[in-house]
Length: 177
Image (cartoon, rainbow, N blue to C red; front, side):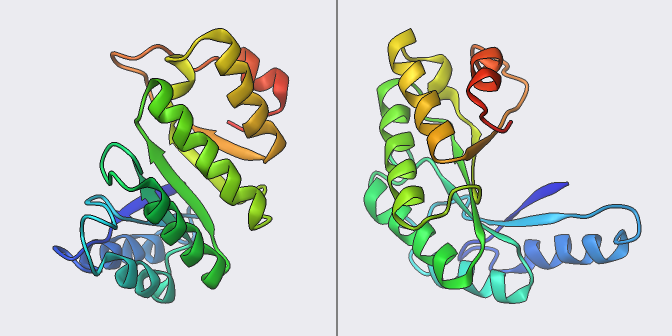
């Protein structure tokens, strides 16, 4: 099971501590990966980057990220921070990407660039990935190839009011889902 624990300057590590306690209480039942998740952003919430590092030291397994363009409005700083923390602590990355269309596609490209540059293939997950269902077919094929080439996994949710992910095309390309 992968769980996301909110880490920010409002709640500090309190929510992480709750998830760590639950993981310990149920260690005999399942394995739980914990994402230190910056729900309020990193750039928009100064001090959160330090808390994310502290969360890894406290027992979180992965560094999270969220909507580098739409929420943060500074995708380069946000993703550089996420990937630098992951590299420093030798952990994986899980980025919630609700951004649709070309904006989300741009974020995918930035994520793939960092994944490749830091040799983090197989250690990066993008959750939601709404952009894949909101771009044209040719662009979608390019993004799927980018995911496959960099071994970036996807985690999906019930789509609600968005189109479902192109599961067949993702499977055919070898993208982990």
